[in-house]
Image (cartoon, rainbow, N blue to C red):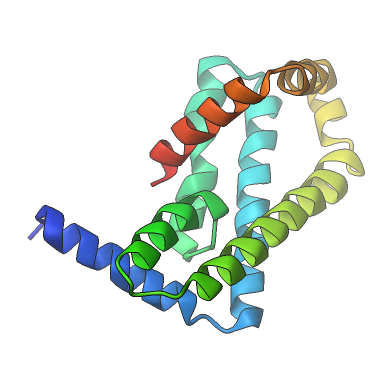
Length: 160
């Protein structure tokens, strides 16, 4: 059947949490690193095409890559582990382990892509989009904590 009833959906989330909680550390680290790369790749794609509607429509390729490769993206793991801990299927210790590793390795993956494949390769310079990248970065840096928090909630809804 194509869809699940609410209880079946919650059970599927619990099973995902149990699976993710049992991942060996080396696999969790690599899948989290790759998720960071996929999201950074999508961000670079957004900038390369000049942003706007086209960039926004291409950005989900990063999320598609995360889903298709079973990569560990912190935002998606937030939902899975909250539900699994509240449903007493996963320990709080496993939640902390996953969130810490996923967040750190997502960050390292993003920095790796940005440094090696965006900055050192001059890819944005070649595409003539350095000014757009600076404009986007300055706008994000000057937002209030509340705006960032609310955007994070919205992003998590989209990812989950």
